[in-house]
Image (cartoon, rainbow over all chains, first blue to last red; front, top):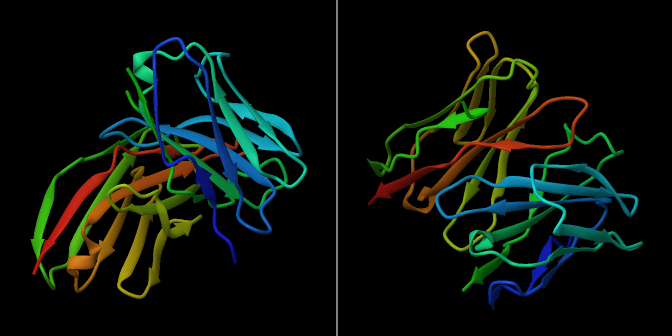
Length: 116
Length: 111
C-alpha cells in the first residue's frame, strides 16, 4: 500500500510570489484535504477535495486554491505569498463519500514553505 | 476560546512510565476523536480513533473519551524512548469534513 506523498519537501519563496505544492493520495483514497501547520501549532484545515471539487473550506483567503485530478492527486496553490504563510503544509487523504467527518486522515510528511 | 485545548508540555518521563495526555473541547457536536503522533520533520501518524465514550485499547495505547465532560485522554503504558514525539488530538463533527486539532503535547521518554 502506497502512502501519501508530497513534493517538494522544502521550498523557499519571496513575499508576493506564487507557489504550487503537490500531493499523491494513498491508494484507495478518493478524498484529499490540505492543512497548514505553523511552528508549535496543530494543523489548521485549509480545504478538502472530493470528486475533483472543493468540498469544504476553512478560514483561509481565496489566494489559497486547489485542484484534484481524476487519479485523486491534488495541488495546493498559494498566490501573493505573505510572510505568515511560512509553515508546514500537510496533505491528507481519506476514503470518504463527501461527508467524511468519520474517515480518519492519513497524512504525508508535508512541504516546509519558507517565505522571506 | 479555541475549539480544542491541549497542554503543550513539554512532558518528560522515564522509560517504562505510564503517560497520560489530555485534551478538552468546547463543541458538544464533536463525535469522532483521534490521536496522532508526529515525529520531528514528519507528518502526523494516526494512532487511534474512536466514536464513543469509554475506553479503546490497542497494544500499549488506550484512548478514553468522556463526552459529558468534553474530555479525551491517551494513555501510553510501558513508555519507550521511541515514543518521544508530539502527540496531537483531533476531533470532528457531522456533517462536516473539517478536523479540529489541538496544539500538540511534546513528550520525551528518557532511557
